[in-house]
Length: 228
Image (tube, rainbow, N blue to C red; front, side, top):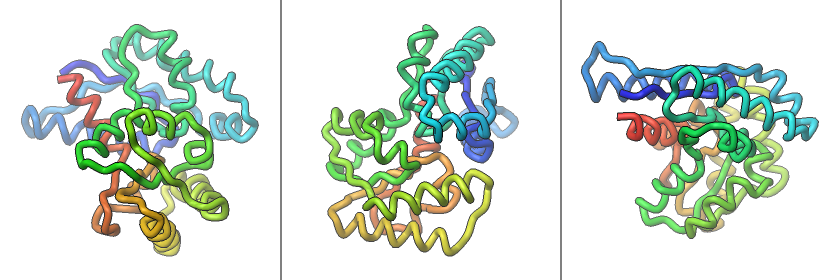
């Protein structure tokens, strides 16, 4: 197995999920005592979150690019940015490395097309839902994307930052998410993208009647396949 580089810490909870998925895949593929070859560059989520709220994406570009370059120098053969939102910086990252940087939206879009769906809902941070960097990737793949109404977007975002990023799981928040997903389903969504790497901590396929796309797992699987 080739070495996978993770830009993690955004958040620690999602990074743990990536690491767990990759090691589970390695064990299944190669045997019980085998584990994945992974290098993690863990950035400071407090700093990242502050810069996001201040709209300093040029500074974030630099932080992520430096993280990616260090992973390449350490021997990584591909890179995952372990956060949907931080794919806003992917072009800056790709400019400084010669190894593949796997786009989480592209990997997710491939799974959506495999299920022959054409219209999906997207849940994530307000940056992921409201900016075009994520939705445009899916649109270019022929997938229509719908997002919650403004009030619901604020609720989804707040739960991510105040609860899920801290590893806090509340049944009330889960029910709120399910209500929002139900509204989007009534609006024509054939599936729902869990477009924040922490949301799978709260929402599972068995909770929803339409296909759920766990971007954390999808992203990790894509890297593992490319690294075997």
